[in-house]
Image 1 (cartoon, rainbow, N blue to C red):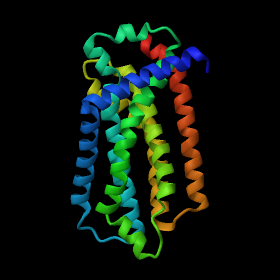
Image 2 (cartoon, rainbow, N blue to C red):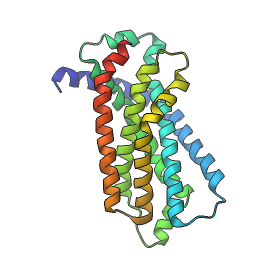
Image 3 (cartoon, helix red, strand yellow):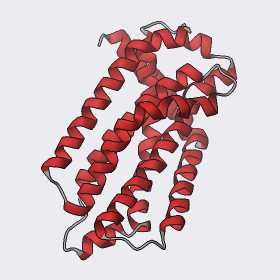
Length: 237
């Protein structure tokens, strides 16, 4: 990546992160949405009788459902703030490769979403009793492996939803179209994160967990590269 592209990435990402830090509206809306999804699922499933493995699977599924939906909420603001201010055309005229604009926007979405995930994952483990079940089995909660899984999963969600945020930003029904377009593409990432998280909670680190995380890393890399290459066409369209 040349120096011009790096400068564009830093400028766009820095601007979005500063705006997010000052207003906090996107961060609060995303955190509230993720927490609401977790609470609803926790109340709906609290009365079910399940084994430790089933509890781990329910916790993992609920956590990543909340984060996938929260990623869509956060990505809707990635380009909408320029669109609402009438500055989207000026942003696209910014000197430098258009792919760097996408990477800058991706970093701007990724930062707040990681903060939301830092709250959502522990809250989900406590709400569904998964952390207590791991401790009762005489094992420590694998926080380091869960953190790696969270970073890889959130990166994949942010990469897909940010790209489709650029595709739908000029459409009237963008709030409905973005999840409809992005979620089918994110199915592999959802499956990998849920499987890796549930296995970590039920069995700890295993070779199967490593396989799922390798797949997730490959998905993230492929999604970022493909979205970076396609972004100029999406932005011009």
